[in-house]
Length: 231
Image (tube, rainbow, N blue to C red; front, top):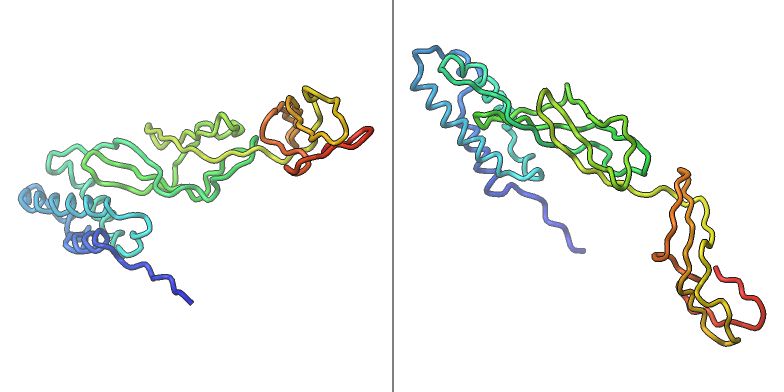
């Protein structure tokens, strides 16, 4: 029996782990005063280096960067301390860090943001995970095949997420337009060209289709004398 190789840390994960390990603690950052400008610059370089390395780590590999929480803690402390050193750090943009638990919907359902995690990117390059205070701007709009984009807001920042929307189950079908030729000689093969079906779904929406259906399960039909029932 062939065994699947276990996932191991790659070079990006190991590099991020090493750079984060070199960071000061959040307490050391908060202890800085205006006279520690040189130390601040050093901390800023270390934090920037660690963030750059961690941004290159894939989601699958992130589990190997076991000290990533330290990076977020230090970045938060540095944003708080930045004004002391004349730096103004502002919120720049948001993106989806972890997609919601549910990404597949039936037409007419509404978006469920459970499990959604946003990443807030600050002007100094630092990042923050956002799990609360998230607003879905079109929360009350039923999703459709043509409207599957969800607009997500945090503060004044907005991002978008596309979800998968499918048609619900079929309730009934009926022939809307008969085939081009309904008169055959016994022994002919039924063609069915020109048929248009009216399909009604369980949500009450109907549509006419002329493609994408099968006649007799896709098997050829050899017609007999008299009336033939085609399925």
